[in-house]
Amino acid sequence: MSDQTGVSVQQIVEKVWLSIAERRLRPGVQLKEEQMATIFNVSRARIRQALALLQRDGLVAIIPNRGAFVCKPSVEEARDVFFVRRTVERCVVERLCKGVSKADIKRLRDHVAKERIANTQDITTDIIKLSGGFHLLLAETVGSDFLFATMRDLIARSSLITAVYRNTNRFNCGPDEHAEIVEAIVGNDADRATHLMAHHLEHVESELDLTEIRDLSHDLRAALA
Image: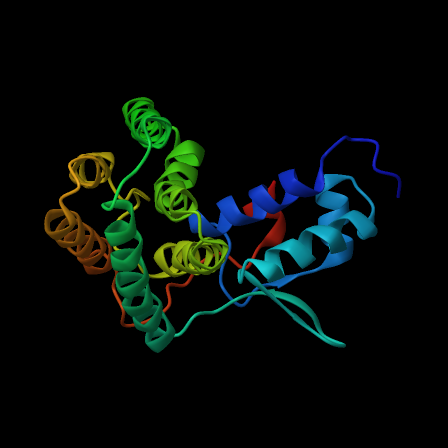
């Protein structure tokens, strides 16, 4: 099949990711190349590219001779991810409190402003992207390739874990709490910034029901259409 619809690899990735985040696509479901190619009206080659990117982000597992499946994080993995996030993000904010440029401060404040707009207008796609994007932006601002790569992996895994285990329908880690963290960083107040970040991550984790995986949809077409 030719890719005449103009649906890009990244658009396919975002659609799958959003379907997981909005709990329309169940962990463990198989992402069949042929069916996805039909749904998006693109070639199987383009689907394979999208699946490879989803695998890189830790959202999809590609098993030889079996196919691609939405990852199914265990309760233990969920706890481990948030434990590591607390450690890494403490390091991030401590580094930032040693000094950030005016340009970096503007980027952080602008990002929080975008979060507020998304929340006010209840734009689910933007809320999901911006919530995780804030934490990724903090790591990027530090200027460490290692910290950025680590946070990118942790944020992707956190998105899947939150989608699977959260108690509420809203996917939102909170612009108000993000704004407080930014202002603590601007004031070079490492104690307050690390305390706020720890409290923030505890808040996010407390909204998870780490008992069992929800029974989400098996229907690939219904989830992605």
